[in-house]
Length: 240
Image 1 (cartoon, rainbow, N blue to C red):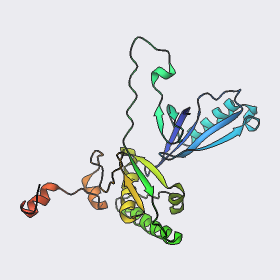
Image 2: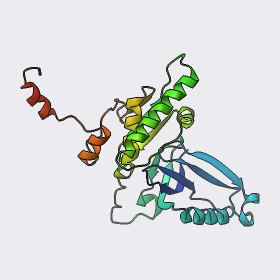
Image 3: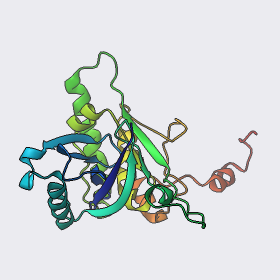
Image 4: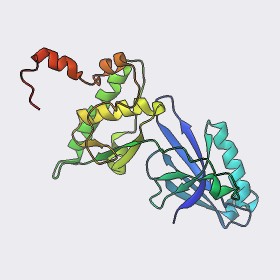
């Protein structure tokens, strides 16, 4: 059953982010203080602190103090969200769900940005050490490419990819370097695959996401210009 939570997010300079949330209905009578946390877009982990171990034996008091600590570390409050049973999908709570209905229609919730999904798919029978070595080499290559544009990017380690198996990336400007990293990683390592929301493989930069063409060219991610290809062949080799 979905849980209504108060969500906080910390976004790193490299574009990666992590979430921290707790149930909206946490009160002084709650038997425990529940927390959901983890990398943005992945399935969030859940921990519970019994009320007896909370500050003043009060889960609500614990929530207030933990929230203050998170804000001090740079987390920003995103409001109330529904956390799905899979602990991954987050849906903003609509105004009609948090306040009495009024004569005026409530504003629509902001649209959820499109996502790319990555998946770790090892080859059957492939040695585990060889898999990790291949992934580490691809990670190093992708990270090195990003240093060419002045970005020191270090995404999660190979063992984390292998353990997590899958995740998602929002196609938003603040995640553009993570998107570039994942695209470079998937190109360099066939064991990592990227797909769009329709399940179709992706191998090129998303056209709806703005990025400086010179930067994409430096990274080797600039889409091919169809007009240039046609001009180069005079149209003789193209069949439609």
